[in-house]
Length: 309
View 1 (spheres, rainbow, N blue to C red):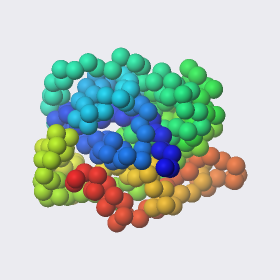
View 2: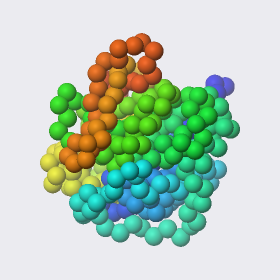
View 3: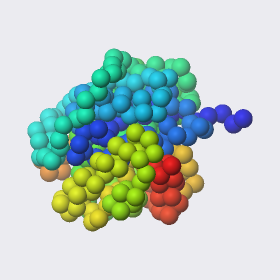
């Protein structure tokens, strides 16, 4: 039997916080359903929701899958630098986080990542679906893990020629993102210009059967998120599942084309805080890649097959 692919996931999962984003959960669905994947740990982090809510959402979601074997982490609640004053505007429209009666993770997400890499040297793919704060803290605390990580796959950035605004995950903690991107390990970034192509309509979500608690919660929360997306003018009659595209990349890189690049993360305070800019790499020895193309049809099909079970 072929060896399983090993992955550590870092997420600011919002499913369970009514009104919040749903795409982290769809990425987790793809990986938790897949028998060929070994999830060695999942860390929570602030981002879509405060970390106490993402930790509760994560613990609840993993319990839906009866995966008590997966270690969970409680991660960073603020960026390495700067503040989250702007987040008050982002969370307008959020309602309460569903109560969770179980025990929240006690292990720090940073320490969990370090432990996983030490246990599985040269085998762990790190899939980061939110701000990269936990990952930056891990390499700051134990820099020896840099050479032992197989790859880092991050949903983050916007790599249009003239980006109009920073992408959310990078905007939350540009300093951490810059540290993770430029630390020397192989990094692949999936930006909004690619991930937004994997969009699904409200009708598709409403047609889902409540086959299990995870799908039922996703279905119930999708309509509200799609309405929010439409009200902001981001998308029309649907929503992109950005983080699920990053999970597809981990599962099947043959559906994507990447280019080797140099990346600049803006540290200018104000509107450009966290903007990402790229140019083609001047050296073939670089380890930073950006996804430029994907097979949209096959990617959507792969995502939806994991949701509509």
